[in-house]
Amino acid sequence: MEKNWYVVHTYSGYENKVKANLEKRVESMAMQDKIFRVVVPEDEETEIKNGKQKVIKRKVFPGYVLVEIIMTDDSWYVVRNTPGVTGFVGSAGSGSKPTPLLPEEVNFILKRMGMDEKQVEIDFELKEMVKVKEGPFANFTGAIEDLDLDKRKVKVHVNMFGRETPVELDFTQIEKI
Figure 1 (cartoon, rainbow, N blue to C red):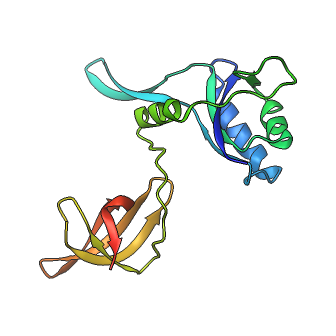
Figure 2: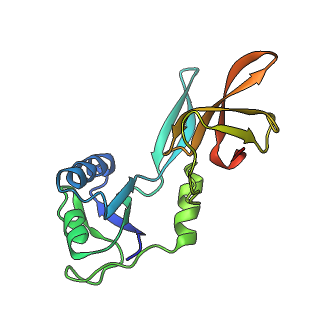
């Protein structure tokens, strides 16, 4: 079984509440192996009010939430019966399984939000020595101090001008020595 992205319909204005409810249910019902990510598609906009600049988030698809699932009877049941969920988009009736989003649709939405769907195999470890492949620190070497799997970032301490300097890089910018 492979994991796919599905669109879930919610009451408008309850998208973040549905996300929180679903994440709690996934944990309490031990569904982490079938339900992975829950995303409320949002854009950041800069708004100027009373001469002050403020960044606000606007829902791209009000009333909808994206969920990454391996579709089984159990996972379908957990999502459908989450408070605030009115159903899946793309299912013909209450008893039928929905149609997943196409990979290019998911990539477009996630890229627009600054998230990337490209899966990178991570075989790095803390304290491991790596070489920077690209960017302003290309050809520097250093030890990995921190791994952020969600953001796909790594903090590497490189030796610059005789001092250890922490540098944040993408996983794609480093390689094992």
